[in-house]
Amino acid sequence: MRHVIIGAGPAGVIAAETLKKNDPAATVTIIGDEPEPPYSRMAIPYLLQENIPEQGTWLRKNRDHYDALGIRIIRDRVESIDRKAKSVALLEGAAESYDRLLIATGSRPIKPPIEGIDLPQIHPCWTLEDARNIIASAKKDEPVLLMGAGFIGCIILEALARRGVDLSVVEMGDRMVPRMLDEKAGGHIKHWCESKGIAVHTSNRVERIERVKGKWPGIGGDSKLVAHLADGQTIEASLIIRATGVLPNIDFLDGSGIEIGSAKGILVDRHLRSSDENIYAAGDVAEGIDFSTGEHSVQAIQPTAADHGRIAALNMSGRKALHQGCVNMNVLDTVGLVSCSFGQWMGVDGGSSATLDSPEQYRYINLQFEDDILVGASLQFKVKEDDVPSPTGQHGVGILRGLIQSRVRLGRWVEHLREDPSRFAEAYVAQSQAVEANTRAFNPLGH
Image (tube, rainbow, N blue to C red; front, side, top):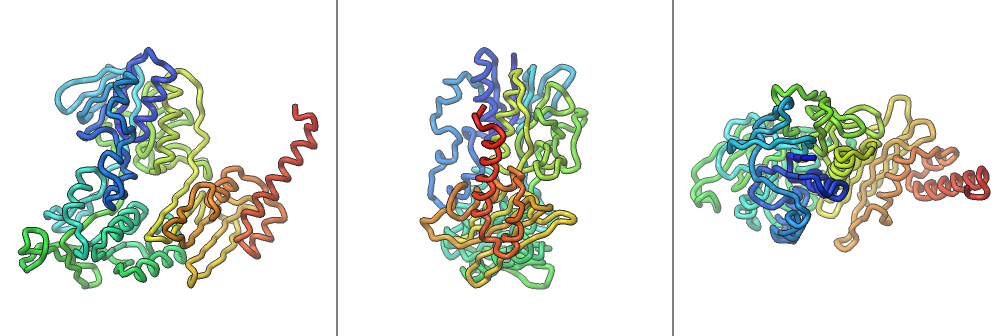
């Protein structure tokens, strides 16, 4: 069996390893279009902070890892797919044949249609090459402009702030991280950032960028970038980073006939199989089932990519594995303020909610219910530098996800949580014990 994987990120690497484990005799090839060993984009912020070297971003630290497993890596770009011939055409002219194909090409950053966006010293922050360019320019106390304060933007913000730059942020939405947090929680992040000396411009956008002469560090020392905002303000910077959204990498599928969903991802079933029975998709490029809604969506987070890669590979190797759906989960640390959202954090029609809001302490809890089932939640809290939350840590990140994913009925606890949302851990323990007691009563011998 010939397995070809397009994409050398977490989904592709985990899929390749899973295929070799379950079908050692199969040939497994990963095609990636970057010169470095397979790496994690989620590690780039740590590289920007100089907490790790470039090798620290690699998904597998041993250079011989893939050779030892018999996994072949090709560094080239896929131009097109011929489904009838079961082959992929590469930029350099070669072609690779497959019996099963996995598309794990991830996302690409969107370049906004802004005059001057292609000037020097304007970069995305998506690849290791981007990171090298930013590290070379983002010096302590240098003025830097970040375009976009969504989830990815705020991850970059954290890294830039820790480099000690003079940072300004422009976000089109009325709050920071608008696709992850409601108005109150998004407003708390803005106030928090401003208290740390970061200038935040929400409900605004960059309309034009120019390069002007002037004594300025960076860019050759004799010019600077000036961003003109929609409200008439201008921001001077020696470096501009654009974090204005991403889209699934599917351009090479034009004309292939593979079905694409409304979110511009490859539509997949619960086996991670596309509309072609021999082609699968995983990670940011896959439009799979959402656990909370049962509808198709793109969940561009690394845990989903890892899960997709494993499940797709099991099915490609002939095993039966079902994907139960992605749980929408985001955890973001913004210079010491942790923000989390889970499931249908925005609520559901006919549902109810409970909120605890202490702006002075930067403590926020919002719970969303459908009848007596928790379907979504938002959580925000300050942490000390050595008090990083873990999935099962004291701040309840894992508990909230567990309540949502288990869909356990809370019964009378809904009323307790409406009075005090911070008691969600008690509710989890009480209902878990109730479920266990009912199980024992139904099956006293444990059979």
